[in-house]
Image 1 (cartoon, rainbow, N blue to C red):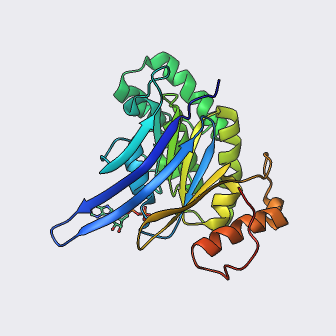
Image 2: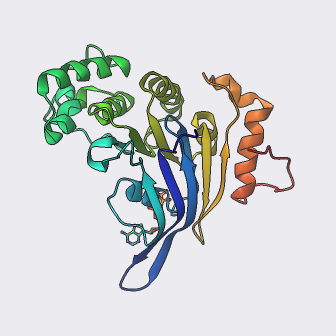
Length: 264
Ligand SMILES: Nc1ncnc2c1ncn2[C@@H]1O[C@H](COP(=O)(O)OP(=O)(O)OP(=O)(O)O)[C@@H](O)[C@H]1O
């Protein structure tokens, strides 16, 4: 028996209606995401990446096509089963780190004793053991983003949506966080959809890559990245890795499209 995908998008389209004009933000996005996958959504600014995450989070409706998350056997409730991480950590500056991590649990109304224990475990998992009682201003940008990741995991969601989570970090911290997020993904067994502008980051992290193009917004490709985990930064120098980044450069018209590309 084949397992149903966690997410099934089929012909999804989104048009924003403004006073001046209609904006085709997403045109015909089709993809299946199996539980436990790490899917990178890569593309230029304005190609509709955030719009896709908003549709998945049930924050906005799509205009046509099918959006299915979960199944009759495994129902999915966006308010409980999704954790979100944004470009900015968005921690409440008057709350200690532990209390920031506990915020979604408080909002949903989860039992506090168990949640507090889980928050300590998560902060340890993201490398913030010993920083539980600090305030956000006492942490670096990378540490704040780790706290935001712990907060996204506190209610044990099935799906993590990450919108350019490392976009505001310096290059070295970003590479370190790339390794961290893979470690957290492997330890937590979650399904992750990860939006990025960085082609290198998309390939390095993803078990699959969805490539979106702007003008008009459309899904140009969806392929499996056949590079084994655990991934190491040195893998970026491998031919197979380069072939995947080349494939995306070609799709985005950033490179000579005659270069060889792997089949996914
Ligand atoms: N609420 C809105 N009303 C009108 N247009 C919108 C709205 N939100 C997004 N858009 C437009 O839809 C298109 C896709 O936007 P979206 O934010 O999804 O792109 P993106 O790929 O996430 O961009 P970026 O990488 O710059 O964050 C853009 O042209 C944007 O201007």
